[in-house]
Image (tube, rainbow, N blue to C red):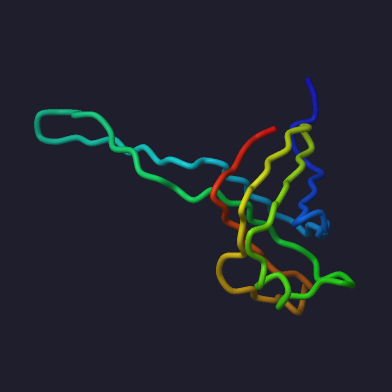
Length: 118
């Protein structure tokens, strides 16, 4: 048995950000949903989906929230404790950045055109 959770690292165009807590990685580019009618399951539909990496980060020295909001066409990587690395290509910052001043944290979500596991 090996380590499957714990320490993780996130970089945006090579600049590492300090994770405070949660980190969610979703490299999926498609969404499949079952279709059923009165006569039973008919099959499924498949639609495009936007891959993302989202986490809660500390506002350490050198972190600029307006700079993060301007991120477009970036490469975002998430390195996990289990040794897996996920790469988000052609990524942009998505949504508004909200700072939790009491904890010194903010949540950032990056979406991209391609999410891969290396």
